[in-house]
Image (cartoon, rainbow over all chains, first blue to last red; front, side):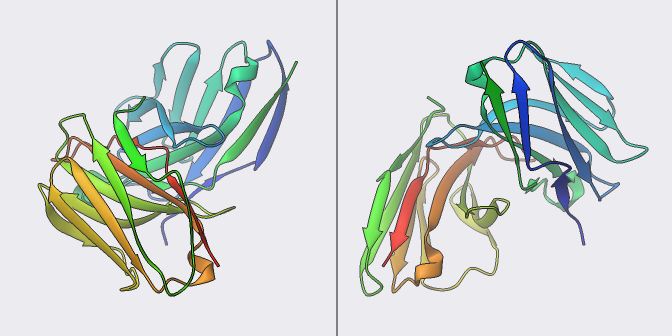
Amino acid sequence: GESVGLHLPTLSVQEGDNSIINCAYSNSASDYFIWYKQESGKGPQFIIDIRSNMDKRQGQRVTVLLNKTVKHLSLQIAATQPGDSAVYFCAEAYYNQGGKLIFGQGTELSVKP
Amino acid sequence: ETGVTQTPRHLVMGMTNKKSLKCEQHLGHNAMYWYKQSAKKPLELMFVYNFKEQTENNSVPSRFSPECPNSSHLFLHLHTLQPEDSALYLCASSQGGGDEKLFFGSGTQLSVL
């Protein structure tokens, strides 16, 4: 079946370091990918997205990399701050299947001061 | 603020109770969604409405009954729930028409006793 999974359930980094959160997906036909951040007591918040015709996209302090050859997605956070502590979800969608997002399990990022 | 408001934030109910969750979006979106989020599990899609019409029921038990009176409001009516239904229920909206980017509310934390 199709699934989106994360390599690590938890990640601990030092404040100021860069963070890399990884995600594997299994549907090679997926053409849209998105990262969400969920802080405690809140719903998921959109961070950044990327379509399959791109391999890199940058936002403010965040970069998403897409490697279609190995079906791998990563989220890089530069100069990680305590406010970045949260659970991060990747999700994939396939436009011809109605574009429904399929979510991964999530990685918990903990930033040490 | 994401533009999607859910009430109540917390709900405790007995298995014989009837209660309703409410969601309102102020984004002018055309699609609304209910998701269930349980601990250690990926987000589970429950229902999708596009232009007030239900377009997806993801094999959800009939004790969950959605209602979408207009494009801005979405309800989830709960009746004779089970303890395993305890979870965070998230509402989301999107532009629709193939726009997969979801905007989530903060959720209702439901406990069924």
